[in-house]
Amino acid sequence: MKINIPDYVNKILKSLDKEGYEAFIVGGCVRDLILGREPSDYDVTTSAPPDEIQSIFKNYKTIEIGKEFGTIVIVQKEGCVEVTTYRSDGEYKDGRRPSEVSFSNNILEDLSRRDFTVNSIAYNENRGILDPFNGVIDIKNKIIKTVGPPLDRFNEDHLRIMRAVRFATQLDFTIEENTYNACKELSDSLKYISAERIRDELFKILLSNKPSKGIRLMYDLGILKHVIPELIQTIGYDQKNPHHSKTLGDHILCVLDNTPPKLDLRMAALLHDIAKPITYSVDEKGVGHYYGHDKLGAKVSKTILTRLKCSNDFIEKVSVYISNHMYQRNTKKKGLKKELARVGEENIFDLYELKRADMICKGTNKDLSLIDKRINQIKEILENNEPYNKSHLKINGNDIIALGFPKGKLIGEILNYLVEKVIEHPEYNNKEKLIELIRNKYK
Image 1 (tube, one colour):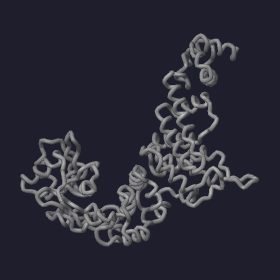
Image 2: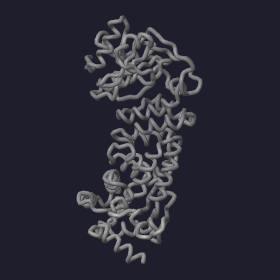
Image 3: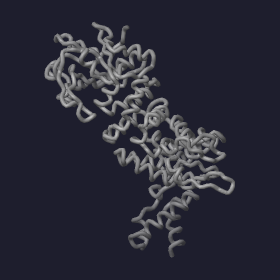
Image 4: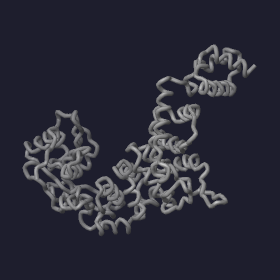
């Protein structure tokens, strides 16, 4: 099998070969090339020790991101390539990393320490494909299977359980039966893994073509309780509402799959109805209602994302999407301007992608022209530079103080009053008219 390697990567392989060292591209990039996918990055494995790698590439910019583990990054304008010395791992004592790493001269020894067969394939132009664990066959059969006994692999590094789910989701593969059973048996070991490592795998799952597959797998394997346990109560939850033909869990996963692959938006989709079970009420006709689930859901999402050690900016943006995700059928232009003020111009169209997905997945009224109408109205507001927040006013706090008003809360109250006025009457947004409004209201 011939694999086309980019010139900037091949140059590294040839430089190592010229100095008498073996070198192969390895892991996910080989797997992706076999699948006809464009690799996101390239990894090289070599018999050259780290000091030799640095010496051979002394005319390049290099980064030591893990020299003790044999990894040197070669920086080129086309992309960075991680070059790692063949190695064998010592005993894993903490379910995370080996107690020691030994460098090796044997490519097969290096491949044998890797997690899954589809990631344990190496290639160079001289030797062709090295595939001691039949990873190519597993790629053909769309199977995720561990290298060696799955219990051993998962006990070495518990995060590999999440990685099995992630690869099955990203590649749309099936987890092999013994590997699947081992994931299930050892699922509770994820409680020993840091929130940051779990979060990073979750993020990759969310950005897959069909992220719902990963969430369902996590639930089936007993992993979800260690990632976002709050989602478990949504699985199979009957919404008892004529506007929803799906269970709550199925609705959430449908929305997730129908939102664009932007991380904050996908996370908002996953959590947008998280508070429905705790806001449930039923009317005299037996219809379920979830008043305030959007605002409470925003608060719950902050708790979840804080636990996952997400950044404050990310948490805030997801929270804003969730608290504003409800579609209001009778919203007028004034309401859209207020929504713009709450959400921000940079987020408003993504919010409407979430609303669109939410409407698609209700399974009843799917008149998406209503969403398109709102989007066009918002574009019109922005194109016409119609004011909708304090920063757009042709007057500021200092101007109001100059009129004789004292510093303090009253200034903010006056500004809010003016925003309300100019939202409804954009033509009022000139300094003279705003001063007139202030004097008429606050004599």
